[in-house]
Image (cartoon, rainbow over all chains, first blue to last red; front, side):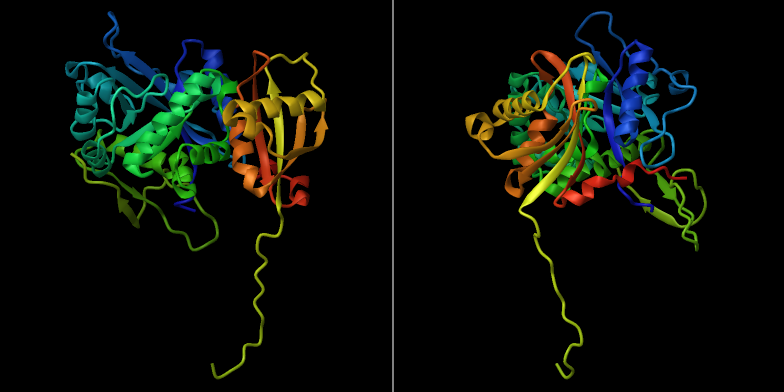
Length: 271
Length: 123
């Protein structure tokens, strides 16, 4: 089935420890995630931090682990998160373009506004380890929704500590007040296999964050897919089209591998 | 309506007042032994962490707990399902040791927990 929701976790924290990273990705595959993204965080305020090229995924595994119940291997992507506290921090360089997904974590209201309205990013991270220092205003949030940029809430802090859990939930609720559950993704941010939760657990957790049932499921599936497609548009001039071969038999094929007729949809019109 | 309907439509709605959850506990430290009493205590404290005293007081049952595999079947009223499930999801440590609860199946019928279609080998 072409449009069947597959579960995606767009935030697996990068560690230099390959064994650990493998372990997390194996757990994610076992839990039923079809795609994961390894998150490289760069905080440009700290000295000597620079955006490097992402590690090649094929170095990590000889054979990628099989997704539970799908009998095909998990897809691993690279994601960059830039923590911006000054507007000059974020520039679209060639290094940035080599990542599949680009996220930004704005520290001030002004930067949040800029991120929503003009930055060429796919994801805007919402603070989960501190009280949100500013209110989410309607115009920038609507602007982000129109541009197809998504807001990300990561749940790992909520698992680790009860104070952080309060911050996570309260920031999530205040975001939902403004965006009404639209364009939200929920991701893990896991540093250990034990911090990952199954996709249905997260769907249920979304209810706690003020999402409706449908939006909560979209937050781990279709919205994440939209992020991936949005990320792909950055590498092209205008947009992307997925084509899928329609087959007369019951035999259904995986969408991406096919490059034959039947235009599906041009996802969005950014740039 | 010119012709009387030849069939009768029956909607079987909200058949059960309970939901059943099949869960398993993963502990970082494998040698640690946990019995059913501790296990329930752990869930209650997770509920208290998230929902306070009222959350800790709400009714659910541990129908079965297997100590060797750390698998359990819980029963909860429909109204409490979301609360219990979120508390289980956000449980991250027990007595300052990391742990995780994975919910494998949720169903309003206990019989449904006897098999799991996701563990079938597909080819």
